[in-house]
Image (cartoon, rainbow, N blue to C red; front, side, top):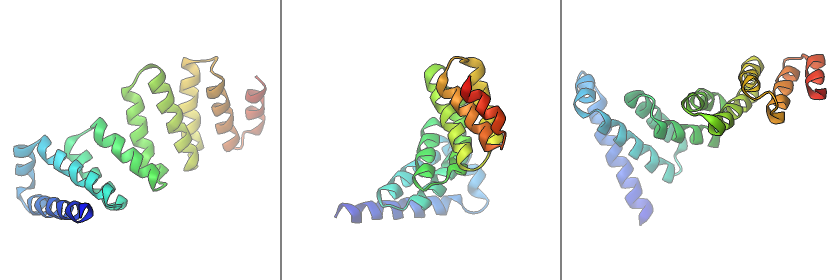
Length: 167
């Protein structure tokens, strides 16, 4: 019963949004509805997640992100879903954006997470640059130092990585 009503809600939202997102009325609708349109996309995305339709939820939430700008809520939902489906490349720029919005320990944790995502997709230079920036801000942070060394190893700079591990 709950699944049926959730599916019905998803279908209603899909149809309503589809009818309003087609044709020349799109720009006018965006201006008239503003954040309401973004919120409807978020609602549909969350409903699709409940139905287990994660890939479609990602597409809907990406539209919400485009419509609503840099939204922390939409960004967080997208990161979670990208990671759920193993799409580190999709999550990486969003985590970097989140990190740029934070300060202190929250920023550090997000930047480390971004570096790990860069490693996962084989972007070792990007990971190294992320980690180096963190090392500049916290030179005594062993976790960051190990991450920098790991990135150098990923780049094939074994001697440099070993020197960093020994430091």
